[in-house]
Length: 231
Length: 130
Image (cartoon, rainbow over all chains, first blue to last red; front, top):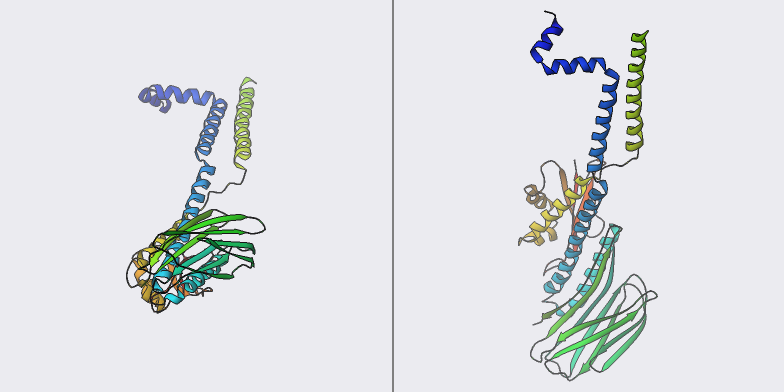
């Protein structure tokens, strides 16, 4: 028995298939090529590159969100660690925010916003509400109007990085007071409100930070307001 | 005659098969689309979270204020992936760079407000390379 006969005998259907393949070599090539092409196209279609890119962008935005959170947390930490130097609390916070902007600049990110502090000492009479306003918008504020109780103060042409200091004096009682901050630049008008929970037996400082961190990948924004009880 | 015609048609069919494969391969796969590199962002996230884990401890600010990068490197050892080299720097704005020469050097920074005794902010920068 020849080798070919052995193969047909032992393999049965496989042997017949092999003989047919030998007869139609050309067609087998075409069929194989169609199968390979179809497989490759299916593989490429399954590999959704745009979805993978989107996932990557999502991860990168996540890192930037964590960096934004880092700045927010450490800004509040600055106020806490200034507890024993209360006269410098607002200055320390402003210095921290200016520093954070310098650092983010080196990483091709823009940290913009305004930082406002309002503090009072309950032991002085009449009460004085000290307000500081730091412009970190990256542009000049043309007009700033700070309104507290029935008084208001208008400041014009506040350049980027400048601090405005305003003091409101009066007889206040234990209740929540609202400070209205209206400012406009060449491209935006904005109004922020901050609440001071005034208490005639406790000195307090309220911080408002309205900031955004922008990069070519994402933009993070947050406005937060926190009150600290002073000694 | 018939045998040689059959041979020619088989050769022709195989050439058609190869050409069609090549044509489709070139048309469909010639557009340059590289897969995004997740390695960098994964390392950055890992390093950032490692620093964050240290920040939650009590001594971290003290190490940063005393510019003790050696202890920072040691503490990060258990938190960072094993397959990468890293070096920690503490600075104000412009940090130094490690002496290592690698084209794939990346960094991640964490800002620290300071402490009760010293309120000057600083940043901890972790450079990574493989």
